[in-house]
Length: 78
Image (cartoon, rainbow, N blue to C red; front, side, top):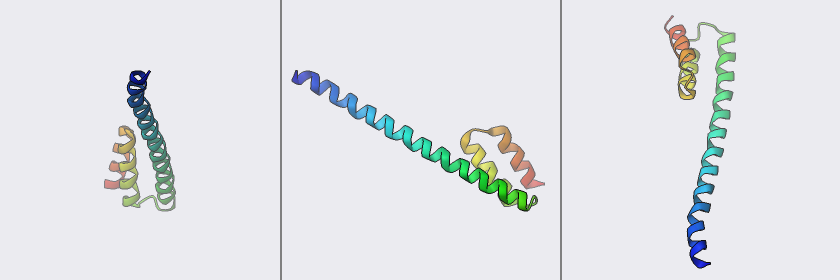
């Protein structure tokens, strides 16, 4: 019985670590969505705001949305 507890303990810790990491990813993704909304509002207010386009491109890059990222970088250059 003691041996079984010794084997299960690392599994419990691993499951906890995986859960906490996935929870952190959810929070990070929500923060990115909030940033996207903020940059889009700034662009709507001033379409020539190159910094908002640049930062929006960076958020898209972080999320793996590379086509959107490239489009925003091109808009920033324009």
